Length: 272
Ligand SMILES: NC(=O)c1ccc[n+]([C@@H]2O[C@H](COP(=O)([O-])OP(=O)(O)OC[C@H]3O[C@@H](n4cnc5c(N)ncnc54)[C@H](OP(=O)(O)O)[C@@H]3O)[C@@H](O)[C@H]2O)c1
Image 1 (cartoon, rainbow, N blue to C red):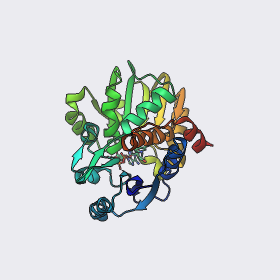
Image 2: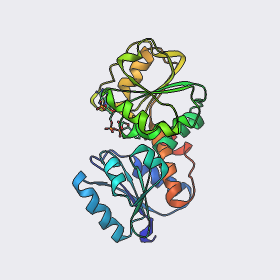
Image 3: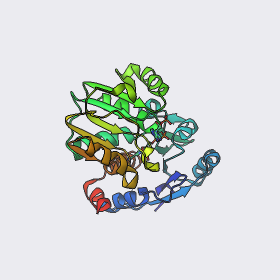
């Protein structure tokens, strides 16, 4: 194994991260050798740490909360997906620094369409939340051709800003939670972090169309409040974001290693 086979996820906190397990499983499934660790890094340490890691020969990183936005600014170049999201979750080593990418949107769309069999084309889709994750999934969702893509957030100004910034990529309808009253959606995606404190966004009732689907970017305990709410509101199908986590990791692995690992066995093992 060379220095260039060293990777890590950087966050704070990061002890709960499943990324080391996922990437170790991907590498094993492909007969590749690599080292993937998790490092807790404070926000003001991210810049110096990335410089040091580059000098030490590390090959790539995943960034998680709270580093995705600041990390984007620290990259010497960014992919289109990273520019659209204003956030990076994957850093790829270049000769002189780090190239930032964002694989969250691709991971979500892959989980929805390939793993869960959810068609987005022609559907009315609502994204809840306007943080880095929400912003990262909007353009990939638009690319699937929904009939409508709306975004609603607790802070009502953020959806307006995001819709205006992403206007060149298509029409995103900015909404407030309260103004959703009376509307129906085929797919409602929770991209808030409310579940981490046992909460859900304050929404009007009856938002799901017949056969409506709920998807929470969160997984584990943090996904429980939204999934319970969605079921009680009559959603026909509910899913957490574990599949997205595995799929965004597979996208990152592909960017680093040139091959996209199969994901089904890893997802099944995590669920097991
Ligand atoms: N499965 C995956 O692979 C994956 C990938 C990325 C992210 N995620 C998850 O997605 C979530 C969002 O991540 P992020 O990076 O976008 O976080 P973020 O930038 O901190 O944004 C948090 C969002 O949640 C909203 N929010 C927080 N508490 C709320 C509450 N009690 N009620 C209503 N809205 C609330 C915030 O609204 P305000 O603007 O009003 O504060 C904001 O829109 C996180 O829980 C993260 O773990 C999962």
